[in-house]
Image (cartoon, rainbow, N blue to C red; front, top):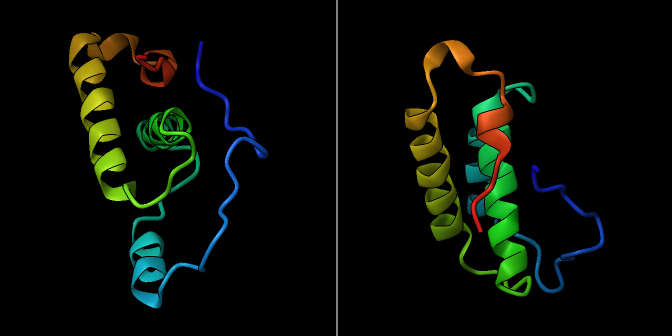
Length: 91
């Protein structure tokens, strides 16, 4: 079952992102219907929640989530990619 993003699970308390951080986020924005990117966002958010919503490890979390999703993609035959395989998160 895919991880669902919870609006209340993690709230950012503390300073707003710096302009450089915000520029990095803006530069990585992709189409919302890109299943790979959606799966990476969900996996990265699941990792954030698993860390107890402790911020400061966003890059490591994103890279780990990318690796997990890409590994799942390599295990799924290309003709069966419907997005389901992408959104299954590993614990």
